[in-house]
Image (cartoon, rainbow, N blue to C red; front, side, top):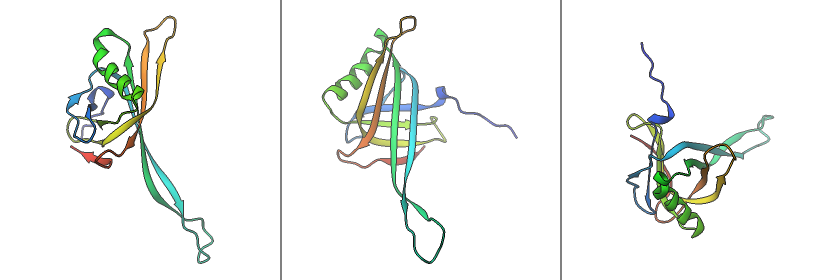
Length: 142
């Protein structure tokens, strides 16, 4: 039985206007990191000496790294404008084009950094978290 490993280049990300399913593919990203966190809630009782835990809520964060190049001006400008105007936008991040898993949501940028190391090309790093405009975040498969 053969195994096919997924690499970062297999992943897909799409961005667009908040409240809609994004359709513009984000091909300029050098690195995309999708982090899911399950927030714990405790429900202890005297019936058990064990500490009991359940999942209370889900949380997600996306970090996108884009080289600061003129060929990447459109996506950098998009994320820059959303960050500086505190505006939400749609983003869908998938681990591959087909047979994949990911998240589709409206997002808000919580930080942006421009790394300016002396001897390497500059990077823009945008960090975002889900927000609500007219739809809730949803885990998706394709």
